[in-house]
Length: 135
Image (tube, rainbow, N blue to C red; front, side, top):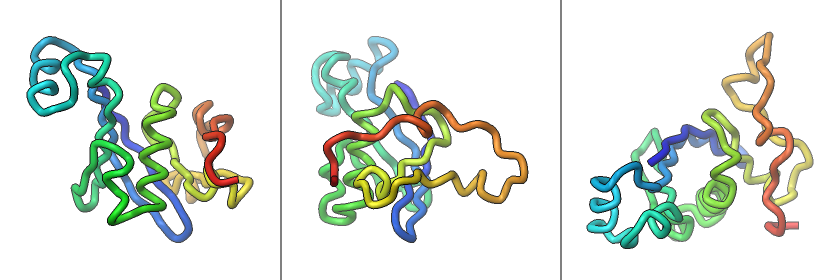
């Protein structure tokens, strides 16, 4: 199990989230994930990423769980997180407008916008973009 904190951004939207990949670290986690319905083994379980909105604690274990409440922002952001998990690091920005090709410049984290000295972004923020969504 691996946890990352991320910033989801869209037009006029800021959502801090915690994402948890259910790749079991040991037999106890594998067994509990299996009992909860996430598949019998680590290969099946590791396909799940639980995304939790930190402000409200609303969560889903898959992108389409957001369909009724957030069919654009959270659905697309969750899908992007699942598909790009290995490239994401704590604090990365998931910019839905950028993913959809509505903007050409990725949003900068609010935590860095007001800072006079901005540390370099991760490779993900400079180079990754989901292909095939939107444009």
